[in-house]
Amino acid sequence: MSQPEQPRQPGPDDLPFTTHLINPHGDRHLGFNDADGHFYRLWQHRQPGPLHTDDAILLCPSDIDQIIKLSMI
Image (cartoon, rainbow, N blue to C red):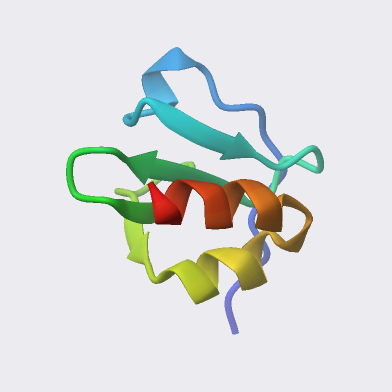
C-alpha cells in the first residue's frame, strides 16, 4: 500500500510547464503542457505523469472550470 503524498508548495524548479493548478492543501498538483495539450500530475520526487482530462478532474474537482477551459483551448 502506498503512502499518501506529503503536502508541499512547489517552487519554480518544480513547475516544468507554463500552466499549473496548485492544490491549496499541497497534495495534488497539475501542470498543463501547451505544446502537447495534455495534463500532467506533478510529483515531488518523480517525473510528471500524464493524465487524461477526466482523471485531472477527479484529481482536482475544485478546479473543474479551469481544467475544462484548458482542455478546450
